[in-house]
Image 1 (tube, helix red, strand yellow):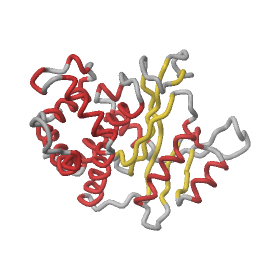
Image 2 (image 1 turned 30 degrees about the vertical axis):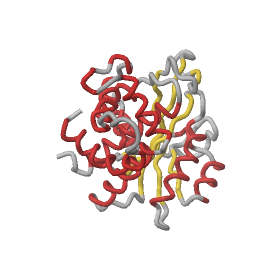
Image 3 (image 1 turned 45 degrees about the horizontal axis):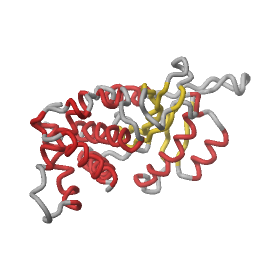
Image 4 (image 1 turned 60 degrees about the vertical axis):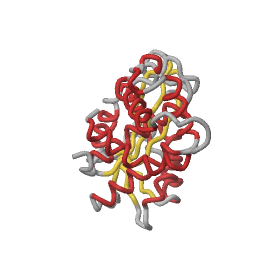
Length: 258
């Protein structure tokens, strides 16, 4: 990862980390070095025990990561990056796109059998992005869970940026469901999904334009090896990596990374 981008991510998360700092006991290991170690694992997808000694003891870096995760600090970092992106770009996402991307997950306890990969263990990353492909919201589910079931929890998160205006989402045919449209409408979203010909052969063909931005967004997040392949065993650890990757992308798109 570009050093400048890593520094900018640190500048966003540092004020949040002050919540869990303590003056008791021995002087703590450098939080900044530990955080950069976490970014190293995120980018390279290496095992914690392969972390270069420069970042500190592997158990300490991993311990800080799990501590920050469970305190909700990684999630708060994504929220902060989202506010910065929307503020700097002066963008209001009244149109966006959503879709999932599947990752192999050989050791994940929360994975499911991927029907598109010969039943191998896998997980899905579901994101909602704006018209520029900025990953505003992310969620994780097993590979054998239908895409539509992950969308509603994401929409409930996304209500925080609605400001009373309907948001149109471009989607593929997996989301072509009357029931899903009704539920999304109650949350303030209009689902513009591609036609699923298997459900209604007589309906006109609908192909939403601009849906490619979500594919581009997934492609960028998959540049991080810890996101492209899920090596984590528990869902909170993997979700944290995806959130950090989305945080980096939002800051980069906001022009903060230089």
